[in-house]
Length: 80
Image (cartoon, rainbow, N blue to C red; front, side):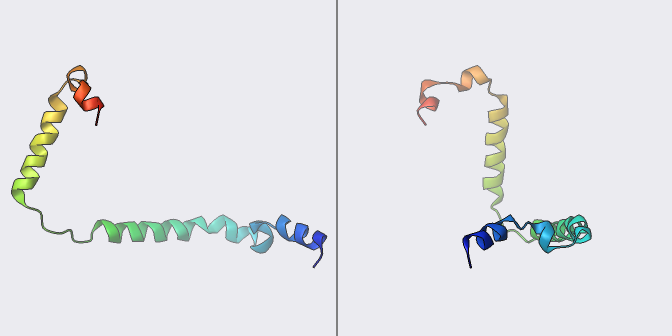
């Protein structure tokens, strides 16, 4: 296999290997497959969570929303 054959092999694109109609329709089944995998993943059972931990995390979240940006910028916070 000579140098020219290697150069020609590199110039081949996906359009040279697959027909145009297949390249045009290929995203449809790929998107469908991605949607199926995502819907399966999103409905998998999660492990049980402690209710007290969940309530504490929500309270921390609400407190963070109530703090002004200027008050949140302290030298201690910048060092983290």
